[in-house]
Image 1 (cartoon, rainbow, N blue to C red):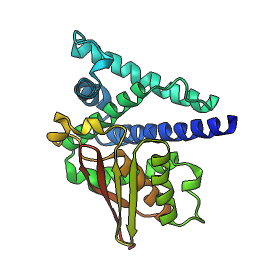
Image 2 (tube, rainbow, N blue to C red):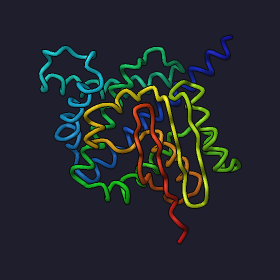
Image 3 (cartoon, rainbow, N blue to C red):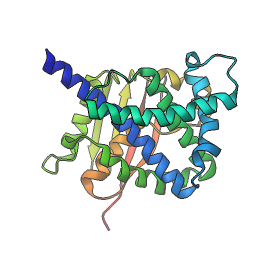
Image 4 (tube, rainbow, N blue to C red):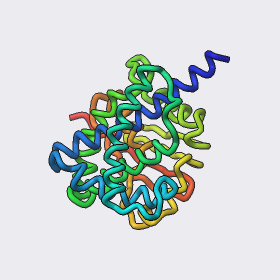
Length: 245
């Protein structure tokens, strides 16, 4: 029984680590393209909006935006330390779903900043390729094994997110031109029925982003997350594999 529990915790750690990888990739590219103050000047104000939209129970209605922004910045700093400590200890017991919801708000904050300041073309043609390269360093070792085919890796990835209840259903379709990742009954799907999604302020699914990193790491060449179609219960992400020159 102990072994099963450790296996489950290790899987949860890998999932949190992948989410932290998305955040770190956004931070690196945001600093590179927008500047060192991207978090304070641009992302945190948007995080306030997303947290109020997606996680209203985390803060009282009386909390003003400036106070909430300060609290979220401290959360970002503390969360990174918690994840690093979790890996050192090999346990996720100090990490909560509320932490993950706030992390999602941070990821959406970065995404909306990039869309507004850099434009969608820059995101597809540069940002996601840089992010995939960075995020590949956070992938579990088995998804970096060169002896395993890309099809096997992608199938293992969707099995992973199903088995650990991040989604109720997932499938992947792969051919030489690209990859389609479909996820349904996502643990975070309630945010899809929100003003932010209806206004298209967020457009790319993290499950698709992680899949594009797997493709990039395996192929040794660029893969682009072309689009994510959101439903009220999940998403379908299309990844384009760039041709070898």
